[in-house]
Image: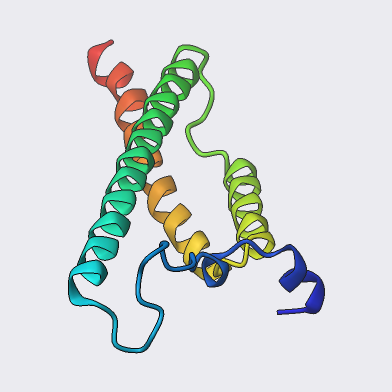
Length: 130
């Protein structure tokens, strides 16, 4: 990572929060406190997972609306230029925020594959129902 990227990075390497007040900062932490901190972090992660899944659900619903629009206006399902734009934007976000662009591209490939499957179902529905 360049020094410019490091100075603007807010990625996972910067996500380590200081120990809560009263927590042991030595190598041998109080077991009960360590477990409480771990549970608190897991609770935070569970909340983030719920938010992530809800946003993903909303994205898929939006993609279904796009599929309906494409079907109703005879627009082809595949829009390769749009896929490229989405993937490039995601990769740029990853670099800007200290994340792995390979990971984010792979994640978006999965999301786009599901989106295409849903759109194909929606657009194909008009061929079988009409």
